[in-house]
Image 1 (cartoon, rainbow, N blue to C red):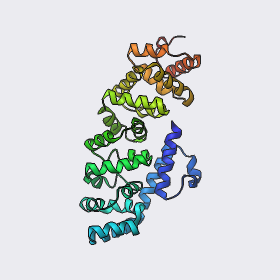
Image 2: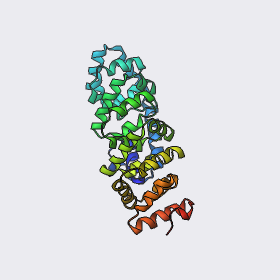
Image 3: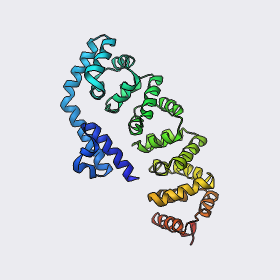
Image 4: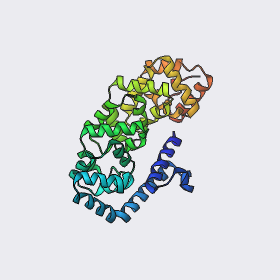
Length: 299
């Protein structure tokens, strides 16, 4: 789980400083929290140093007719720099320009766009355009980038984007990388049980149990209990898949939290599926670490 987060942070940092992941040097060995701090510091430094240039380029595009400005942006500014220039644009200007740019180009712009600095622009975009760009990002497997926009988009637009995503595995990957747990909780809470159950099926079929279990880690007890009971309601093969993944990926602390929060019937059902003695020992140890009642899973 931590390896996935660290890899995501390495990628985000590499994009900010304009290098490949393997060129990060000693930073490549840092923890996810350290990489996140380095990324934010680098972003602030780069933006502060070049803000006057970004402002001039934004001013240049404002002086040109929109069609010509779109051509200028594609041919001379490019998507990476355009993402940084966007934060210096007025929402009305950015909207008019975005409507003249092809969706693949806008998706590339998103890779360097800072959602925190560009929130007003992002919220000015029509829902259909956001959905089109999201489809392009999803097709490019840019789940990390999609997750970065969760805070900047309204609940309504987020719901529309989620409805447009056909593969529930994509929802798991995006949810796992959303940094704000309160925002993630709002998004997951808006999903019905059938939709969440489909993400658990995807976790089984696509090997995404680390994402599924870690996604709700740090959210409210009520949401974690809801997810725990949905796990317990899955077919035996799906529950065994979760247990097997816990053994392979060292997910027992997350699974133990789910077991503690399950209703008695669901917990009993999961415990009855502990076919492997090592599963039982590992879950017992994780429950003990959490201070759970030993009677919850007796020898």
